[in-house]
Amino acid sequence: MNGYSGQTLIVNLTKKTIETKPTDMELAKKYIGGIGLAMRLVYDYIEAGVDPLSPNNPLILATGPVGGTMWPTAGNGHVFAAKSPLTNTIGESKAHGFFGAELKRAGYDVVIILGKSDKPVYLWIDDDSVQLMDATFLWGKTPLETEERIKKELGDSNIRVASIGPAGEKLVRIAAIINEISRACGRCGMGTVMGSKNMKAIAVRGSGDVTIADVEGFLDFCKVFYERAKGPKTRKYRTLGTAENILTHNKIGSLPTRNFTNATFEGAEKVSGEYISERFVDNIVACGGCPMRCEHVAVVSDGAYKGSIARMEYESVWAFGPNCGIDNIEGVIKAIELCNVYGMDTISCGVIVGFAMDCFENKILTKKDTDGIELKFGNTEAMIKIIKMMGERTGLGDILAEGVKRAAEKIGKGSDKLANHIKGLEMTGYDVRGLKTAALGYAVSFRGADHNRHGAYGFDVGGQVNRFIVEKGRGVLVKKREDFYTIIDSFILCKFSRGLYQNDHEDAAKLYRILTGFDMTTEDMRKAGERISNYARIFNIREGFTRKDDTVPIKSMTTPVPEDCVAKGAVVKQKEIDFLLDEYYEIRGWTKEGVPTIEKLKELDMEEFIKVVKPKIAATPTGGSKRKSGR
Image 1: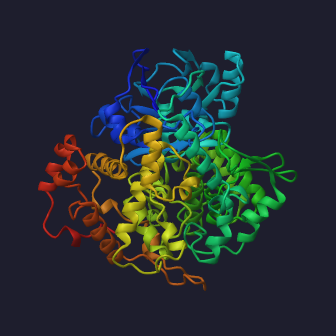
Image 2: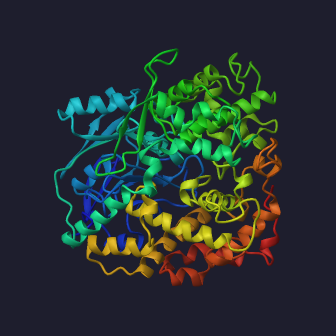
Image 3: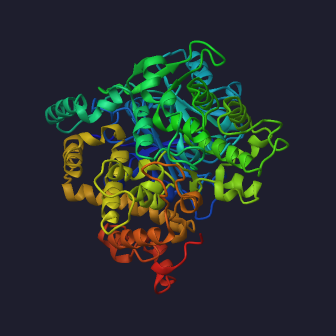
């Protein structure tokens, strides 16, 4: 088998059974691998309406067809997928490092985890030998401690481990699955699903080879992409890292500040990539087989947070910095480190803390609610305390650990107007009030608020469109970018390498042919990307999601940018969302309510899902595009 290992591992934690079966190659070819194949397999193992924290929610781990190879940025990735306990949508999250390559070399395309163990366990995959191991001694440990103890128990320091921390054990809904200390499958609460199954970790040792159909062609193509990876398209990642975005977004008024109240931050210089690189970066690390070396590791050398160490990415720095009104970079580094210790998504965690601060500033929360903490914007010590309370599910942290949407529902008092999420997933660091193409991308994202599902901010920030208005043509831009992003994440290519694929689907199809030997045209690859996007929509429709869920946070629609900057007065209006959705749905070949049509499913060879959409189409009212969104 070329490109794929040809094996799928099925682990039933309830029955304590482990079996191996051939990978369904027809399904793999249709959905490529990575998020496409993992998400599609979730459907086969779950009924509609299942509680994401029940044993009936499968957790799917998958590699991509380039996994375990030397392809730049791509041989090292893996993805987890399940129904999200944070959103109830299809959930997926990927990470890079070394774990994915090890799993592929152990001989598996997919690991399907079913049921729930009656006691803590970890899965030990040693090539063909697969065992469930007692993890009672690991319960309560951090991901780093877990990794070290497993390696010691198994007597091999080269084993790769992906694990949850205390947050996953306590079912904090933003829990992550961590590998290599700081690389996280962070979004959508995949660590929460693992914790709900009493599974602490997956340890892997692989010694096999990954075969390639056209080795000479693969090596030649690799050389091309290695050269591209050393060029201008990846300069940012190799120099300052993504934290360079802080000053970029501040300059154009798209840096969400103080829980999306402002669009610029007066303390941006103190948390900028330039400031971090000059004063705090101790090392720059690469994933396996990657020529870019983008992981900027910062260390605090003195002061209250001395010894804190964390990987500095834009989203994490933004979430605990500008979003919380904090310009104390040492405190931001400590906050990111704490998320790695507890095993929580830094983005969701920072947005939840910012929400709590906003509630405190607006007297919705008081010191009585916060155990005496002065939870104001800019209070670094308060932020650190709340993160710990979330990770341990104590006091107010127990409510906040439910995610910002559920927390707002529990707190009440109009706090929902301050909760920045889409479909239950916390927003990321792009202020959509002045990024109207991105607003559409966020609104329709199948896993909720996430820039990595659409990348539509690029059209706005890059000046390809007038970012302050909506107009015909935005739907085409978002649809095309979405469909290519699903391909990137199904190969499990690093998003930082997206600019290297100069011909998008054509390059991807060529790579797939070289890897697998399968006949895959550019149009076939384009169709596969569209198929994955449509599948995710169908899963969410089956779970009850409708057009009204395709929107942006209330605050983005009710609070114009207040400060004197280029984005002053910018806001997203309901009529703009309606306009954008109407065009996007039409381009997608969906109904006015956002349901894929039977014709579209037939075109994409997805007839098995007609039974899902047919009753929804029949129930679609005439003039659906004029319906209110509920906001």
